[in-house]
Amino acid sequence: EAYIGAIEAANSSLNAYVAVTPDKAREMAKASDARIADGNAGALEGIPLGIKDLFATEGVHTQAASHILDGFKPRYESAVTANLWADGAVMLGKLNMDEFAMGSSNETSHYGPVKSPWRATGSHEDRVPGGSSGGSAAAVAARLCAGATATDTGGSIRQPAALTGTVGIKPTYGRCSRWGIAAFASSLDQAGPIARDVRDCAILLKSMASTDARDTTSVDREVPDYEASVGRSVKGLRIGIPKEYRMDGMPAEIETLWQQGIEWLRDAGAEIVDVSLPHTKYALPAYYIVAPAEASSNLARYDGVRYGLRVPGGNLAEMYENTRAEGFGREVKRRIMIGTYVLSAGYYDAYYLQAQKVRTLIKRDFETVYADGIDALLTPATPSAAFAIGDQEMNSDPVKMYLNDVFTVTVNMAGLPGLAVPAGLSGEGLPLGLQLIGRPFDEETLFAAGSVIE
Ligand code: GLN
Image (cartoon, rainbow, N blue to C red; front, top):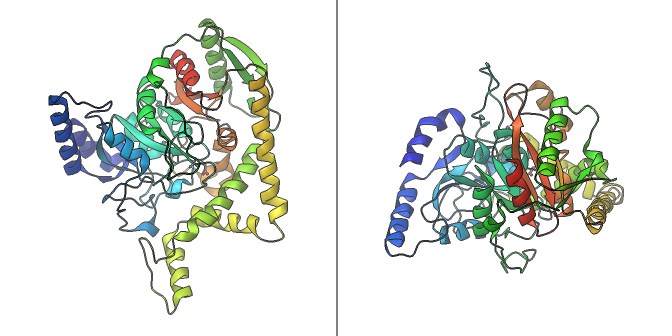
């Protein structure tokens, strides 16, 4: 009831939820009470969560914040949300996001932007919560849920977490089942939690992760007790500091924050080692070829026949055209066009194939430092603090917006786990975060090192 009340009071201003499900929440909470009374409590019994609108929730609004999925209510439940309900969690509703998870500010949503609950000191200007999981991050930061699900294709868990002073982890590719999550770029997409602290993140990830035959990229591996690694000593851990992440024009306060993180880990007994990931500068351009290529293929299914919106036309082709013209927003159309272009005959070799080769080189960079005995890497999570909603520079040039992902996309290209953890405030009093990057399936080291920083 406290969360339902908080949502009622604050959501019309923050716009974090696109659908609130109080009846369902009460019904699930009642079932939780009964299980607790029976001595049958699950790991998340009665914990109220918000769910990103990208996850299919049976009989409940699921539109990926897009007009093209108008009225779509799936007849099935995503694997990740089913795992959460099986452990006793309670659903509060569906959270706003960038349309089909394409964006870094939550401004591409069909439902309009999400406001961050944070403002700069002495200012009334509304800031973005980051994206694409902007609703998840804002809802957690504003205490409109105890934790939230999110997804990360190029930074969409870590960047919004960093910009809102919350904690988010993108686990290793294959750790959470993608079944029932609307596909953006299937070889990069992963689900993960956004929560208030590292411990909550560890607890939520344990419930979200599973092996699932319905997702062929899901990995058959025991899910560890992540919570046990929270607060574990980092003594003797070798933390790499990749020099290529020290980018030209990086604000001094980001540099200072990074240095502070290094000191904290060193003081806690970790060994700090300078390392090199030489192909880092190619990651962003390669990502913005691979991700749109996969998106253009995945989004072909929204044809006005199978799901959501249908805009009639004189014949079938016209119906497709009208539906897609009206149903998709600007950014989604831009991605479909870029993706179709880079996959087309004559351009495939020059762009897509080239980007795939770059992807292999990026992956090898990480393999090399890990083979040299590095346990995890520490980098900034974002190149700046949250910008204003409607920021001219970001919204007039898509490439400027894409630059927000410069520190996060490498992790998706290499399939590695990445944790964003709050590390301080900007000069304007806005949250800033650091990122820890781990070895494949070693989320535990990230939770251990993350709890030193938070
Ligand atoms: N901001 C990136 C993009 O727009 C990443 C999005 C994501 O991780 N879903 O593609």
